[in-house]
Image 1: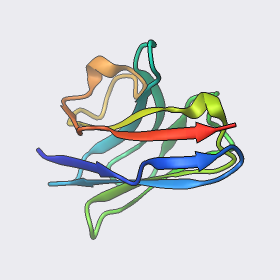
Image 2: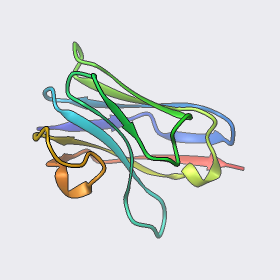
Image 3: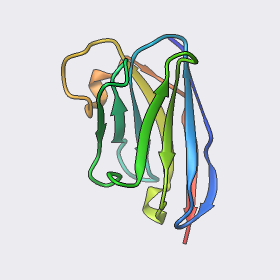
Length: 120
C-alpha cells in the first residue's frame, strides 16, 4: 500500500487549505497530525465507502474529510485554520473495519506527511 500526501503549506489564521492523500487502493483512511514537540494525534477518519466520518473535537466543525473512490484519494478540507493547527499532517490507511478509528496502532500504512503552518 502506498500513500502520497500533498497540499500542505503556509496560511494565515482564518484561512483554508485542502490536503490530498492518494492511495494505491480503497481503505479506511484517516488524517493524523503531529505538532512540534507533541505526540501524533488523530484529526479525522473516513470509512472505505465514505459512509461514516469521525472527527477529533479540536477540528469538528472546521475540517471536512471526504473521498473520491474513483481516484482512490482522500481529502481533508481545513477551514478557519488556527495557529494551533500547525503540524505535520499524515494520512493513514487501515485494513480492518473494527476497532477505534482514532487509535494510531490500528493503522497499517502511513504516508510521508505534509507540513501545514498557520501564522497568526
